[in-house]
Image (cartoon, rainbow, N blue to C red; front, side, top):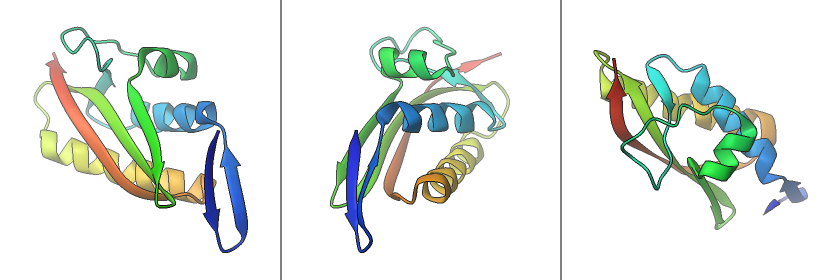
Length: 117
């Protein structure tokens, strides 16, 4: 459970829900081939399911000063502009999290670990 306090009170949201939301948003983003595990950056994990994201540690979540911080390891499709894909992914995740949960997103750090043809 992640908890954030705001002027309305305390918001508690499960990590599983946030992981599934991030996984779904990432899977719909153009140019993203898959999520990578933080431990094994050589192989493409290509996971977008909630259970896989949580167990393989593709996404790291933390709360500091009432804001949500996200770390994300991805593989991109060969031939796309990497900075454009990352910018699009960051904006899409930030909008989705803030719209669906009410959590303020402090920072989203995207690590591009490889490319897939």
